[in-house]
Every structure is written in structure tokens, then in C-alpha cells.
Amino acid sequence: MIIEITPDKQKAEALIKMANVTLKRLKTINEENYPSNTLVDYYDTIHKLLEAITLQTGIKIRGEGGHQELIDYVAKKHKLNEQTRQFLQQLRDYRNRISYEGFMITKNFIHTNKQSIKYIINKLFEETNKQTKSSRNQMNQKKF
Image (cartoon, rainbow, N blue to C red; front, top):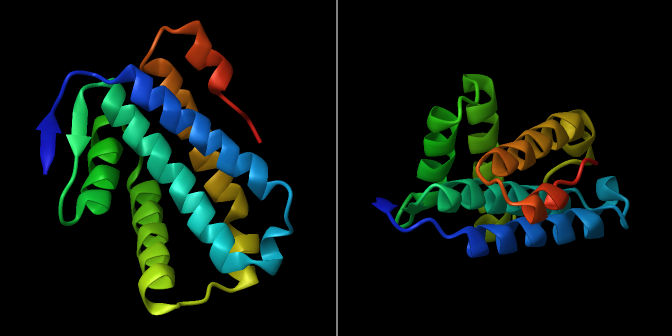
């Protein structure tokens, strides 16, 4: 369910910071040794950035199917291409299967898709920076 709210720049900034913390921690491990955990962390980072984008513009998405709706909303409003939208939905599905069914991701999946995931994350950081003129938020953008 999409709800219009007062833009919440403070919460958006906190989510961006948490996304950076997760990425920093990911750099300290061999991601291919822990592929399922790595995918969950990448998805969590992407989700935080998607939510930050919507909070900056006064949109909150919640309820049943909220993550799916969030991906579709940001893809449409911020012109992510269909391939990217579908890939994000695939990551969401894998994250749910890992969390609720014990599904295991192969290290080959991480190896094959790591650059695409990083590209998407960097594009989402850029989008968060477009949404605010705050110089503090500009410093939050991390390329990796």
C-alpha cells in the first residue's frame, strides 16, 4: 500500500548510513564463502536505499507485498529499466526463500551477478543524492 507522508529526510539519511555500514562489513569477508548471507546483505542494502528514495519524496510503502511494490514503484518513478526491475524482484524472491525456506545461493550466483548488484547499488546512491540538496547527504554516497 502506497501512503503519502511528509518527506522524512532524517530517516532517509539514517537508512543510507545503515546501507553504508552493511557494505563496509561486506568488504571484510570473502563473499563467495557465504553466498546466501551475502545476497541477504546486498538485498538489505538495496531495500534500505529504495526506502530512503521514497521517504525523501514523501512516500511510504507498507503491508503485504510491500517490498515488491517498493521495487516496482521506484523502478517506475525513477526510470529503472525493466531488466533491473526484474533482477531486483529476483533478489527479493531469493532473499525471502533464504529467510523462510533455508534456500542456499551458490557462490557462482554471487560471482556472476556481483558487478550488476554493485552497479544497481551505486545507481540507487546517486538517486538518493538527487532527492536532496543536503551537502551531508552528498558525503554519504559511497562507490565500491
